[in-house]
Image (cartoon, rainbow, N blue to C red; front, side):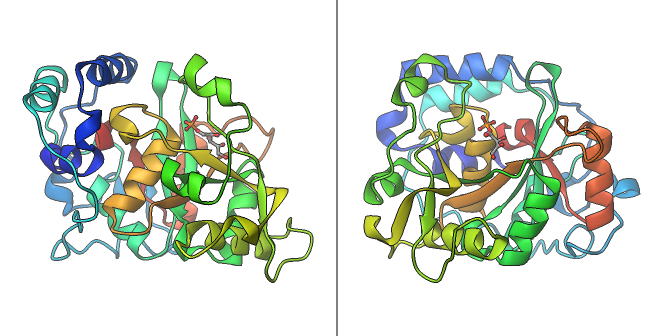
Length: 299
Ligand SMILES: O=C(CO)[C@H](O)[C@H](O)COP(=O)(O)O
């Protein structure tokens, strides 16, 4: 990922302050340093192909098209000396190469554009956590069924503050946002009213996710509480908070899709613990899903 493109499209001018970058710096220091090994220069080659040869998700080996640039034109922002200095001085390795064993961000974006899942991995503090992520606007009942089967059962939607305000979805616990930046910021839960039954089926939850992603929906289109968990995206994305919420929304935005993601933490099918990297790779291989790293997205 071209760092300048990421800065340009994730930051709004009012956010580029010294205070903001002090917080970003703290977040980055918690991340694993990337390997300088180059596995997919320019995003034109799939990374660790040995574990990504399945076909169900249909995206890992066949989707990459380097003739299609990421449409970056949707967000207004500016580059400042602070942003450039920060990343030049703190990032290591080649920013155009994914970490060894991971797919490139470009490949992840192409997969999202095809309406397919990517696995987003965060290994902050050495504890791997993978989330299945896709664009909310392209979600079907089959996607939600896959998400429920392989994820935690909680279907979340990463959403920007402006959309949460438009839909009148306040945080479940407002103090969390200020007191603990590592905690996920869940809003009250919702079900779409139109065309749904009790809200919990894959079909109903897919309708809710689609409704959350539509700019046309109104506050009255949802029942509260419900079975889908919106998560508030922190403005600035992964450059501010290196979480799955921010990564998922940044990725769908960079893919040129409406800025609402659907995500769920991936669980070990045997014992219900958080899936290990080996579990994530098995799931990726069996379903042809690229695995991307939040560290690479930040770089
Ligand atoms: O399970 C999840 C969503 O259902 C996510 O893993 C989590 O809630 C949000 O992740 P993060 O705190 O990294 O943004």
